[in-house]
Image (tube, rainbow, N blue to C red; front, side, top):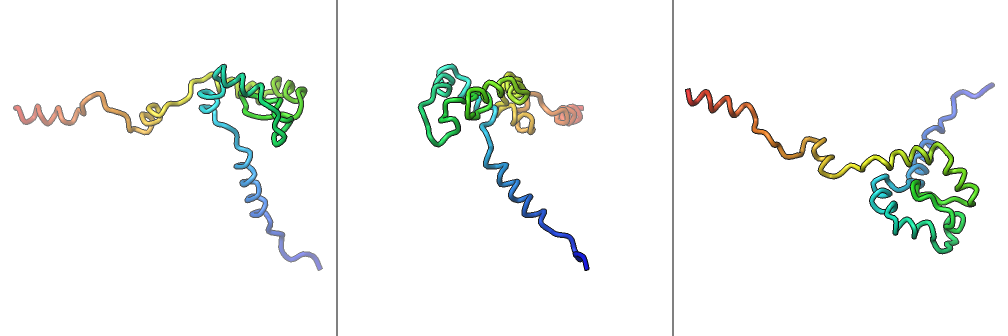
Length: 126
C-alpha cells in the first residue's frame, strides 16, 4: 500500500527562507549615497584594517554594493557584473527626501485656497 497523504513541509521551508532573507540585508541606497560615497569615507572603507571576522579579512570591499569579497579576482568579477552596474545606475538617481515623501502621501502644505470657500463668499455677497 502506498502513501495515503502528501507530505506537508512547505511552511517550514518558507519560514527558513524568510529568516534568511532578513539576515543578509545590505545597506539602503540612501545610506550609501549620503554616507559611504563621500570621498573621505570611501577611502576609509576601501583601506580597512585586517578583520578576521569578515570575508577576505575586509580587504576586498565594494562601496556601491556594501559587500565584502573573498579575493581580489572575485571583486573584479563583481565590478563587471550586471548586479553592480545596476546598483551604480540606481545610485546616480537622487534619494527621496522626507519632504518629498510627505508630499506624495498628501501631507504637504497647500499653496492655493480651496475653490469651495470662494463660491460661498460670492453667494453671500449677492
